[in-house]
Image: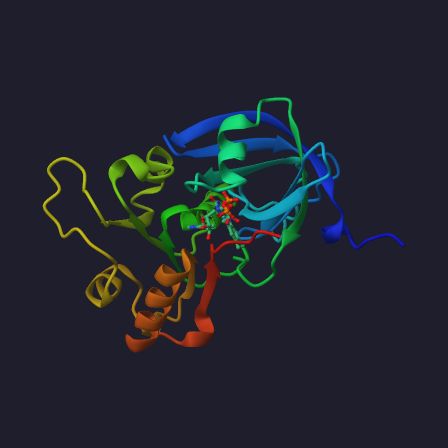
Length: 253
Ligand SMILES: Cc1cc2nc3c(=O)[nH]c(=O)nc-3n(C[C@H](O)[C@H](O)[C@H](O)COP(=O)(O)OP(=O)(O)OC[C@H]3O[C@@H](n4cnc5c(N)ncnc54)[C@H](O)[C@@H]3O)c2cc1C
């Protein structure tokens, strides 16, 4: 029996790899048969060793969405993923350090219809990311840029140190159209005089659209980060139905 498209495994070839930080790399992959995705969706990646051992992980699409656009879908078989190395991890060090241009991996998708920004939706959008949780939010920002959307966007991103900040140069090109607030949890940039520490209610109140604007809120990152942010937003008066979350917990098969 033929599998539904989204469940079929495809073969992607690495065509470029660039380091965003010393411990995170963006992989550009050509995927024949790829039919596109909406901003916020992810893929399952499957690696199989010569002895037949196989393992899978999920990775968000960093590239702009190509479906659900105001002008219709864009045809592209090129996708990008950004992988943050997890120390002692099985898959992330392989993808970022061992996989070479020309190598192939299996992947399937797009997966997930909930954590998705519809590029035809005019509502304000509040993005909140912790660490590599910025990846699917970057897809939404790139989609917004590509379709010249005027939906108001704000981004709050929590990062350990400036050396860990993903997409820093590209985010700078999106400002001031997109208001970007950075929270440094360990060390700030030279001359930074603001607070160092975790996201809290005061930061969320100051950086986010107020609850009465009914913004769509997308929160992504490690599970404790996502839960803290979502609970605090509800305490601040945000409608829980407008808060969409994606947790980057372990996904090993
Ligand atoms: C929907 C979804 C989308 C994701 N998108 C991305 C993405 O765009 N970029 C990205 O870098 N990762 C993403 N992840 C996380 C990714 O799937 C893997 O969990 C991550 O790369 C670690 O895999 P690993 O094989 O290297 O580590 P493993 O061998 O699975 O784990 C090694 C050790 O690290 C712990 N661990 C596993 N995953 C994490 C984690 N995410 N954070 C902290 N500790 C962890 C494990 O409990 C274990 O102790 C996503 C996860 C989900 C569920």
